[in-house]
Amino acid sequence: MTAHFGRRLRKGAATTAVAAAAVAALSASQAPAVTGGHRTLATGQATPDGSTDHSATGDSPYYTDLPPLSSPNPSPSDSQSPSIGTPVSVGEAEAGIPATVLDAYKKAETELAASKPGCNLPWQLLAAIGKVESGQARGGQVDANGTTTSKILGPALDGNGFALIKDTDHGLYDGNSTYDQAVGPMQFIPSTWAWAGRDGNGDGVKDPNNVYDAALAAGHYLCRNDWNLSTDAGLRSAILSYNNSTDYLNTVLSWLEYYRKGTHSVPDGTGTLPSGRSDDNSGTSPTTSPSPTTPSTPSPSPDPTPSKPGNTTTPSVPSSPSPTPTPTPTDTVAKLADAGTAKLTAVAGDQFSKKISTSAETSAGKAVAKVRIRFTIVGTTDTTFTGGEKVATVTTNASGVAVAPALQAGETTGDFTVRATVVGRTIAGLDYPASVTPRVADTLVRTSTTALTCTPGGEFADQVEVKATENGAVADKVAATATLIKATDDATENDKGPYFKDTDGKTVRTLTGLATDADGLLKLPKLYADDTTGTFLLRITTTGGATLTVELTVAAADTSSSSPSASASPSASPSA
Picture 1 (cartoon, rainbow, N blue to C red):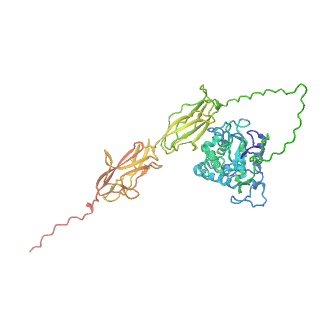
Picture 2: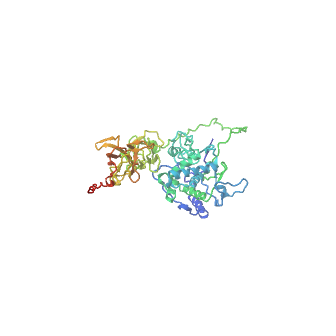
Picture 3: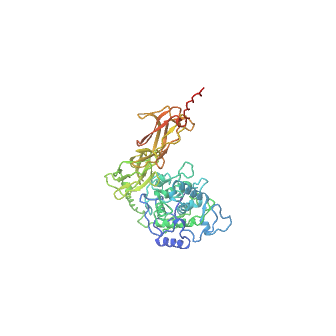
């Protein structure tokens, strides 16, 4: 069964006066500034981040109910809920969030605090969006795993009062193979879920109809682009990227303020449902498909009106041919072409200095503006786009060019691919080769000038420590190898003299897998000596060619200075 959204605001349908009055009333009566720098923002259009195209929801309709003017305080703690039969105020009822849904929001906040701490995502923001998008999964109509008991679908985005987004998932999520529809408790459109989807409940599936998956995906979506949600600018940008409407922004902020003042858990399925609002009164609030009923006996139809003399039949009226739909910009794209992308290479841990530029063109080579281009990182790599995502969708500009966000190299070196495709159209993609090279150093020096000496069978008092630099700058996380070699011109591993010990205490004369620290320093383990005396060599090399050879001396202790002086000559024999 599927629940469809009606009585939800078509984008721009609510009058500015009504929205402004509602927000003003809320701000005046119950929404003062909150801690952490958040406040109710004034009505006024803000521009969402330019690196994204549509929004998470495709700017689908949303519930416009505002919080009650009565404050939720005092409210039970999160671990309590009002007793059955206890009168519940309007404020308390609206502050109640279904238990499973509330748990999903809090788990998402915890995961984002660990993976993207700079975002400062509050779970109350997810609750505010969940309220506006689906009425907290229709009052918590979810099973024990957090999956909605029936699908929650927005209207078909056919351009009739909504955005025009043709099918991108072959109906996989929304059951519509012609147009996309927003899906699930957080109302993701399929093309966004394709890259933003997450597995929030650990079942190995990314399901937009599961509140744990959807809440975690929403958190990552809001935290992309390095937005800091503890600032007004970051919060505004994130919310508008979810649905680019000032009325939507103000409605979400109102619920965010409200939930910050106090919430409590209520049993699943008992949450309050929004009544919604639609100026054109189209549709009804979400409901499940009705059960079939026994058909009633039809009433007799009245006799048809007698035809006039001479008109025994009514001439048929030719039907007007259906107008041919005007092609969208996406429909006209025949190919993708590179728009001057330079070689894509970066050292591990660095940001790529060049960005990918792709143009959308017709079969005649004419540039096409306002087309969504999806860039996907493919291959075994931990490189991401700025913001930590593997996928970015960008709309072509007036010149028909989409410029992908900057690439951020991880620690995995090697080659990978960035693939550009057209969202909503099946044409050949365009692959861009990219490469991450290892961190390097060109110079190694010891941090101490103390001579390294040891007696046979003993251990060296000082450990070898070196510093790596590249062009004079600290070379951090550079791979290194240390080997005790036979001679300056023979890098073969020595079979006698000083040695290291492994974890089992066994002799080791070559160490691999070493790396400098954040300050470019590398401190080797303690060195030991066997019974062989002499001068020995330790060679340290790094990625990039830096090499340092260190002398080690094994010699018997000098006892000459502590030996007793020679005995005096015996005195002459006494005379007779």
